[in-house]
Image (cartoon, rainbow, N blue to C red; front, side, top):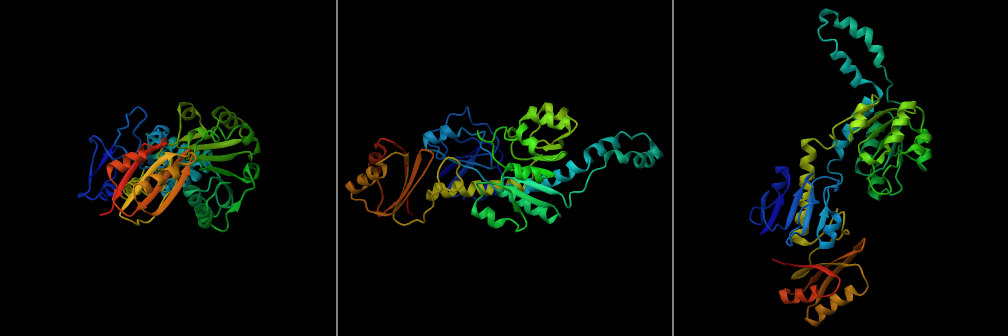
Length: 390
């Protein structure tokens, strides 16, 4: 029986995928095998020794102590792409919000309450203050062509926009999914100099923090409109305010406003609604649950933020899942222990990522606790788990 602790309300669509005869899930569970989480901040949590994996129902993992998990051999999953359509739709809405002063117009119209029969005349008289351009025929520059950026690019192109994208790390799958009419930018300057609108779809890392700064604003067209539904720290705030005040940037729509941004008349601050749809929450929960189940039941890893991708069909009486430091001679020491115990290896997979190695080893017989202890005693081994075939 696997025990799953839920630290947030997880969609019942996802939880329904946990078979009742083999899984127990609740918010109050001691010694869990896995944790399912959305936004709960886990940095001050004591990680139980029983914990094998954490499934984040969403893309960002800033609320999870990933480094601490890696040290303990805990696999952290996220759900990239599960909320992509929800974010895409909000980005499309922001294109219109940034062009036509819809927000300002609605707020102004509310001030006419009490004018009675004069409202229609006042509306006609005042509407010219909220004029803005159409997006059709304009150029949208997209930085980051992953799950969300790709959907935004294709949708914008279908709305009649010219689309240019930049992503030096684009995957083969993402490239296949792009419309043939989306043009490839040679670099930031090429993209910014062509774009009437810019949409950000990249993760926040040490390399990307403050990426959009004074030097990047200088490359942009005057009056550019920017959408940020990726992460707040991507834009250098002081440089942004300067660009807005000078007119270089005519509007920013962001899902990550702070107080200074909310005060600025040219910034539309949305309260982090990118993935706030019931469909998105269900999709993320389903994906997180499936990934956690696959790891618990078969030891396979897909969409982990701290472990390598590792998937292998079951082949043998028992599957050993071994986490170790990625240092020389580890595989040799592990296989030597198995050979000394007269355990034959049917199939083996070894993958590594950022100092960690993960081994899936299918063997021809059950493995005892004493044999597992011998593998654990190898210096550099972090965790050993045996999954017996039914």
